[in-house]
Length: 65
Image (tube, rainbow, N blue to C red; front, side, top):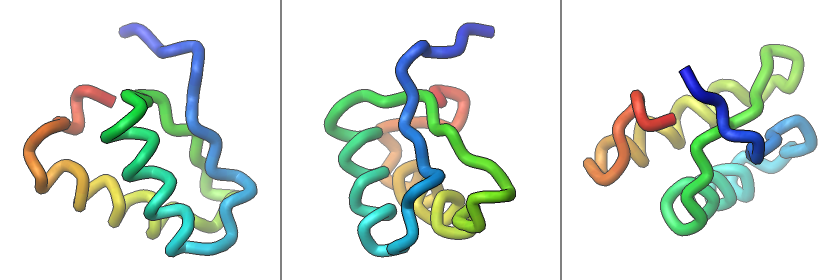
């Protein structure tokens, strides 16, 4: 397994709407494949829902991250 050195951190993301938009942009437009998230950030629901939206588009698969 390879882990990209550059990741997208979600620890300071308090606004769910902005986090959703930022994740869409980072993953779909910038090619980010490393999402840094943790239970302690309290935003896992938004991260999960956003990833489901992205995967539903069919361009990126879960195994790509």
